[in-house]
Image 1 (tube, rainbow, N blue to C red):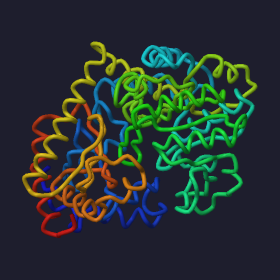
Image 2: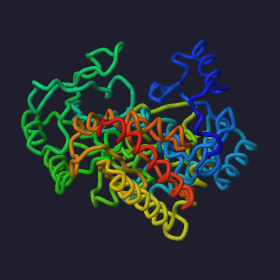
Image 3: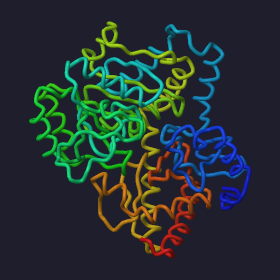
Image 4: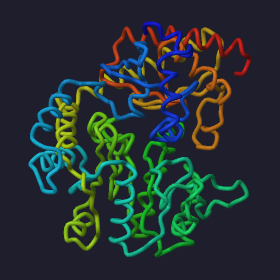
Length: 441
């Protein structure tokens, strides 16, 4: 964490941010990065669980590329596989053996997946899954839930539901420039509310193509489903002959080798993977039941993409999946233990300082709120609870060389060491003291 306490002083990093704003909209290539304060940082190297910025400052990294870097930055197994693959080519507009190798590994790890199609981003994979489900059912309505994120494309990106709406509400555009017509077949329900689901299924009987959800709501608070809730959704889909789609872009190959579905014991009809599937290399995939996927292979359902299945991405995925499944997936035990140790340490340190916190999540990914609440199970509360304290805590940690996701989510990798956890807890103690002194808890 050399010199990281001076991260907000004038520097090459801040000069780069000013330069970038002249030629990149907002100085970034994804609006998510706009949220980092005091400005989006610029990094030149990642190693293990650390990042180095333009000024040579190092940070313990819990952003991990917003989740993909499950093995750590510059893992030699993945890097070497990519370098070797680039020497063979980039894209052939044809097939190559690594595509089958990766698909076989995904199918072996996730029992609900019998066939796979690969693409480049989570948003693309969501778009494909919705098309596959609609083609399989010949229906158009899609149920999704508040707080869940399924990418930025017009057909599924939504705004907040109005408070005055009942449990069944039409979707509203989530951004300027998005036509309301693109969401005419999307229905938005409150999360963890079985009554709303049943009411919607009854109202739109025979019209629902799919229910899409994050099995663990990672994009808004790492909120697990209430006991029996996912089982009830599965039962509704079976009864209504609708497709159940798990968006495991975040949880797939992060929380377990078999994804969140293996922890919950529920089989979806389609699953969307991304992020950790290739340790940060751009890759996503849709997989599911053979009878759904085979329609894509006939050509009757369009799915295309010049870069789908490109050689370096497949090599990265093959190496990543091999590392994750080694010794029966033993790495997940280590990552989970590290994450839970960090969570326990944060709870203990906050209590010693006198700052109330709530930590929630399985370990490889978790969320921290500043609150006295014993649990949070709805996205609206998750977004607002303790926001003022968090807005102080995140930059306080950054000044001490610990980089966190601005919304309060933490990711843990196989590369995080016990020394780094200890350094993180010392930084947290000092940051908690700043929060307490500000009187915002």
